[in-house]
Length: 356
Image 1 (tube, rainbow, N blue to C red):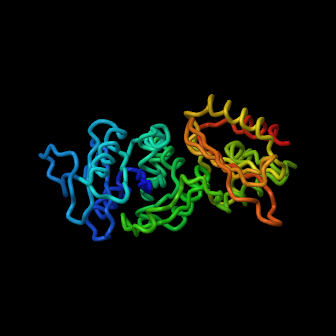
Image 2 (cartoon, helix red, strand yellow):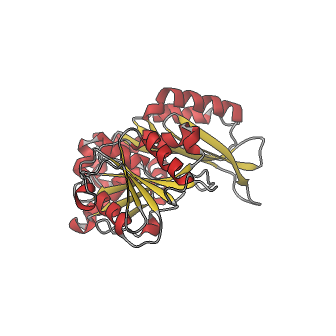
Image 3 (tube, rainbow, N blue to C red):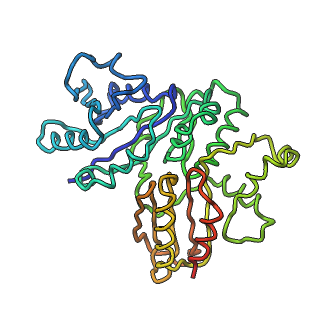
């Protein structure tokens, strides 16, 4: 039986998560979707759609969707849904999990890799983060949870962008890109996202694409052309920006945000030594795992003609052999790390030492 794709929906308060969920639960989209709600949601759906007096945990909607509140933990809820589906009591093709506005999506994502029973039934498709353009800068400044949600995202939807100026939106997108250059950003009208854009994004697939926002890489190169490094990109420029206000003024109109959630990229034309890399990444994940939100790489490894794809969430890391390097394709390793105050220099130098 094919695995059931799961989408984790996270995002700031007021960003339109509830609007999006209501649409999923009431719109005639012809898909059978189970929506799992964190019961202690600040803005619960029940008030409008569901009768809150009922003790039933799973409610069937008129459009064939199912709404389910988490009373214990996610694992138990998923097992219950899976069991009912196998017995033919429930019919659904996919699952959407809403995390509360303050939740860390990490443990939710980890559930799909740590529990064999869950992994045999469900497949994590992607983490979507909704960002409220009007209040985003303040929320990102004040709340680490908001910054973490951005770091975890496979796709970012920015709502309420019509309420801010073009330059404010640009500034926000620039800031989000530094926190997470691998998640595409899309400005959407409040909650009005087509479901096609929400599902089957395969953000967690071990696919051989590593999309990093090209502007982020361009900036990276522009920042480092004077360092003489051809492969390791150290992010000095952003850290220094605070000390050189005059330099900052010339560098463009973007405000400098020194967020604790940030990302960096490692690239090299040399092949990796598999044993050294495995040891190094194992050690890093051991020490910094809780602060590592998402990381992914498409690697050129000594001893194989195939691309090696690896990715992880917190301490959980997986790798897989991808497709063959194409005839004439430039063999290059590319990795992106997104985390909270990760020691960039240690990581970049360490990776450098794992090269053949």
